[in-house]
Image (tube, rainbow, N blue to C red):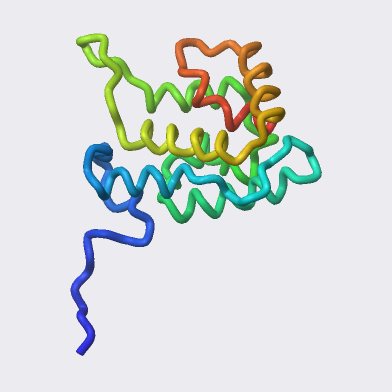
Amino acid sequence: MASTSKSNYGLTPGEVMDTPIDYTTSIGWKQWEGAIRKLSDELYDGSLDKMPMFIKKLKYRASATGWSSICEINVKCIFNKYGKLSIEECIDNAKKYYVLESSRKMKETRDAQMSQQMIACIQNSMNVHSRWKTVARSLRLPSRGVPMRRLLSTVLCS
């Protein structure tokens, strides 16, 4: 007889709970490793002709890992409307994830962790040349107190 009870652990673990992931546990570490692995054996070279496939693979990873809460900015999906997002919108959105506590310590949130997972995944999926090109572009952006890593996906799409 099949069980009808619902599990607390889903196919998209990032969407099951909204508390920060404990990376010191086996489950937390496995979630990190699964989320940040490169999207395919062929690394993205930064070319425009390969970008749609790269974005499609990243969108699939976002769905599989539960990054949905960080994939919309002002009701615009970052995978479908990336050309319509301004740097200012991305900066304002990133400020929601990175908040200082009264002790001047960065507050750890699930969305900030998912953002870091996505950035690590993107970096692991790019070749060295395209990574350096993206870093060079990001250095010219006004970060306004937002960690530059959060803006990587926007720079990649610009």
